[in-house]
Length: 303
Image (tube, rainbow, N blue to C red; front, side, top):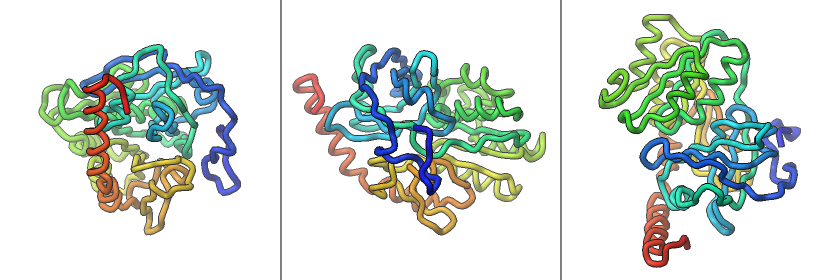
């Protein structure tokens, strides 16, 4: 782990050291409705991960592989933190596990780390569950000597996560909610526009959240020529560039998020294509989730 191939891509499974298994959930905490924080024992990953990287998780043998960004890590304790929103069968299955139970697989760290340097003023925008993967980037950017402003957005106060952690990590935190139940009543783009008007252009914007949010953040920064990085999370299967399921178009060229990303120049991403592809298996995902819930209601266990 932590090495690159000669093409500068993230390592394949063959490049990763063998792990001993036993990916125990040592802590579990509900952060918001349908959003859970897991602290998982994964010492190899905790020791070598860098900001912006992710893992591929299987809840049980034979289960689906899902990509989850590492929200934090403790190398001394050998643990990583994953923040997961329950949106389908696998994430619901994971939510049914209790502290002390173990995940079948945690493979990583995967993907290219965030490019960290001293830019000056960096605005990191986290929308919804995107606040979690923003957290290690805020930590790393500030450690590199940047002034880091975090903009946190959620639909309602109840859905806002990790505010305390972000206040410890960033120099300044600006909070907004769609309904005005907490912080400013605005979208993250509105808060960003106000920041630029009052303080001038930041040297870099990093945006992580729903694709539609990232798209409009990029539309907001483009007229000001503000460099903007986005972290993408499309459908992904193997996480090593083999299946091609996570392909996106960036600057007119095909890229694979798992090995070329997950971060890209936001002004070059074809968000509309990515959003169309993300809906391609919606019917099958719903069918699988419905079957799982039905089986769970009948016998109390997963499929």
